[in-house]
Amino acid sequence: MLNEIPNFLYELLIKQYGEKLTNSIIEGYSTKRPLTIRINKIKTDCDKIKDILNANNIKYKEVSFYKDALIIENYNKKDFENLDIYENGEIYFQSLSSMLPPIILNPKEGENILDMAAAPGGKTTQMAAISENKALITACEKNKIRSERLKYNVKKQGANANILVEDARKLNDYFIFDKILLDAPCSGSGTINLDDKNFNKFLTNYFNNMNYVDKKGTFSNYYNFINDLDSFNDSFIKDIIKSYFQYIDECFFNSSYRKKFCKSNGFYERKNFVTLFGEITFKRRYYYDTTSNEYFFFTDLFLGLPKRKHFDPFVCAEICEQATTESYSKTGKIIANKIGKRISNNININRATARNIVLAFNPEYNEINDLKRVEKLFIMLDEKFIGSQFNEGKDFMTKASVIFEDYEKEYSYKKKETSKTRYKLVNPHACASIDNTLLEDTIDYIYNNYDVNHIKEINFMGDCAKWIKEFPKSNWFKFTSDTKVQFAMDNFHFKQALINLTTKKNNDIYEALLESVNSNNKKDFKLLIEQFKDLNQDRIETIENKEKYILNNFRVLFKRKLYRVFIWICGIVF
Image (cartoon, rainbow, N blue to C red; front, top):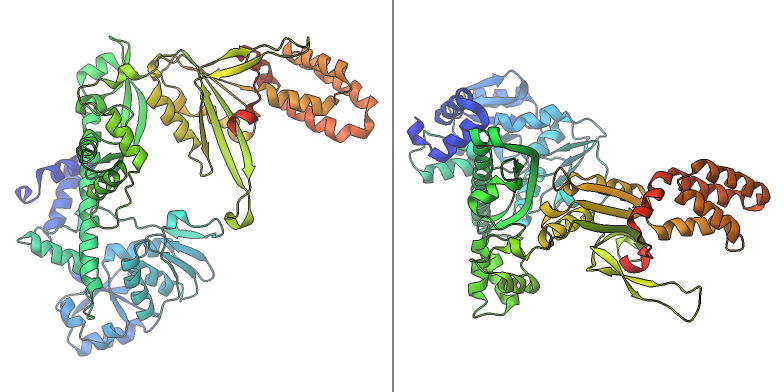
């Protein structure tokens, strides 16, 4: 029996489930699956359906865990389709495993429920039936063709559901749900049946089980078939690639060399790595070799994957070859269409990306030499609300970071004694985001431009908003065990708060408070504030607000002296 399944699938099963459970799974592959139906209690009841089955000499077994399900013993699916109970939507072909998620979810009257991947509609209509058609169900299906099948089944079974042709992950914040059902698309390996003599039979069985048989002869039937075969193929191949990459890491992790000489610093994701078969995200460990004092990802090293690159060498080579005869813009479109799924592909390679790949691509070039080596980086963080005609009239909150290596004097004013020297940032780079990708964008820039193993210190600064204080705590900035990560309030926001507290006419108080902060003397700071409040009772609310702001961040205020960077951050970031 083991000879009847591919070696790679057997190895994947062994790795994930162990030998005993794998043998049970393979035994399940060889067992012929019975036809199972679900009685649609929105339109009928169990006794009526059983009477009809008995009248047609159809043998069945009841299911112990779900009274609405029946196992059919002597009737095939095609013959069932000639019965009125099928045509009227009183029964639905559905596997027992598919019935489990709605049973566990247990939808109830009045509950707001989201079905994130609803097509073809078996679980959606089952949830409606369980709740006596009184749950408030939102069924999402991002594929337009598959959504038509969903609409057809919902209508046929008389289920109440709001159907959205949309990616459920991108729903507006307006939606609030009590319960969410996600039966995510998978590789389909669980549908393999070793009784099938050839792949054609397997495909037929696969799509029949997915309820794709429709008496109406339309092009959508063919499109559904090709689209789902495409999805099956895409998911299956990418799962193999991902599993193989992670298997390599697991082998090294368990090797005697690793156990003796290398320490694991935990898992890190390589996100959105584009291969010719599609975009994948996989995990692998980051190691430290005690013999060579080097940090490395073994999977990347073993496969020779280019460091910190979004596209694999095959994709880059295709782009370079195509660009010899086409424009960068057209090249990007042509190659993007070759990647991954043949239908509804969401890969995008724009003109700038194609151009950068062509200019940078050199298969003989060791790109680590092109990365900058610095021991210290600075990162400023800030936010702004920006007006927009979109977003239902609400302002967008834009978060930004500026990464730079140092600061240097640009010039000095000499006309006035009070004039200040003007400084500029060394090699600044700004990242901005309105969709919470700022951390990823910042990390990507650092990885793509600096040898992170050489960075000893990263100094963050900002106005001490909650997200800004949390930002430096990400483990991604701990490039090595020796990397020191620090945070301090930037001088601009601190002095702005201090001026608002004292006003410009009380310069002596301003200087005294500034000195107490610079000397890390919180006791004197509090004493001066209390005396100042006694003399300015008309401004007590403003003084107390700014006092609280400064005292809450007193520790990180003192640290700003370590950086000796006094920058008007808002003018730089935005």
